[in-house]
Amino acid sequence: MKALRYLEHGRRPELVDIEVPTPGPGQVLLKVTAAGVCHSDEVVMAMPEEQFLARGYSYPLTLGHEGAGIIEAFGPGVNTSFSLGDAVAVYGPWGCGRCHSCSTGAENYCTNAAAEGIRPPGLGAQGAMAEYMIVDDVRHLLPLGDLDPVQNVSLTDAGLTPYHAVKQSLPKLVAGSWAVVIGAGGLGHVGIQLLKELSGATVIALDVTEEKLEVARHAGADYVLPSDADAAGKIRELTRGLGANAVFDFVGAQPTMALSQSVAATGADVTIVGLAGGTMTVGFGLIAFDAAVRIPYWGTRGEMIEVFELARAGRVGVQVQEYSLGQAPQAYEDLHAGAVRGRAVIVP
Image (cartoon, rainbow, N blue to C red; front, side, top):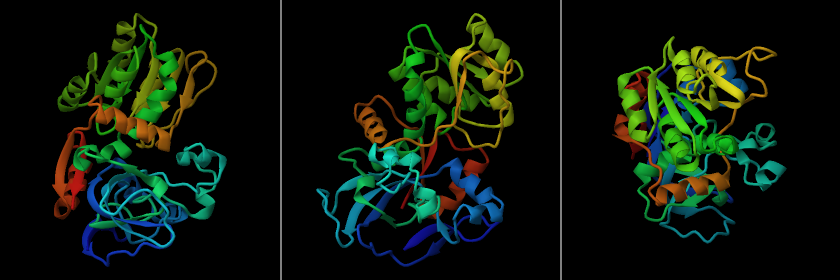
């Protein structure tokens, strides 16, 4: 089968031929119907090699942590109500299934995963950018039903991650509140939709290009602003000097984190989702009183069900650019160049 793999440090991902994997005990083999492209993959491939290896990653690595497919085969011992041929989406942040976090469905915060070498597909385990993939356990499958896998596969991360982030701040986002979204890319444009669907907040969205600001408008932002040196002052002006009750930074670079910190209102949530390597120093007088800074990771299995129910009802969606598996290397070049509108999706 064909698979897009990160073969060695410093090389761009390449399409190669490998054997179709065989599911082991408790595992499921999927014939992949769609796989999402994410900046997290770029972060992994940009890591210094010692950091890559220290995290338990190894070469070659099949990329793709957003996956959907058709059940092709079950490994020995699988007991499930799923049937061969069922269309499913893959919950990515795999955990041990035994710890307290996993027992509540929060496998994204599994306390045993690192010690036991359990890693997400495409981020340690072999991923979805191939004609077939292995899923470690049926509990990590969500029925798709009649949902289009290409249009919805990115909800497994680009929908679930902002949903998890927004959901925790909803008590602060009542009528009359303000929410700031920095970055209207793959995750940010979904975050805007979720804020408009689930909260009473007025949403201010920021990005650096007019094209991305148009994406933010289309997603439902009430105000769009260039993310520049004047942004903090304009946000303060819009909010009558109070600042935002919640700030969601889907970039995570040094300038955007500084902006997030500077526009937070008293008691605000500042949520850093992006992975661009910025840092923040907090202390008395450096951030608004009673503000909370959060670094969420992905989302729970229950939240993934909720996200797909919103999609099924037509209340949230992902803008996608479609690529064939043969075009997958180009998809990463386009992502690296900032030329992807919404989310790139690979269709084997």
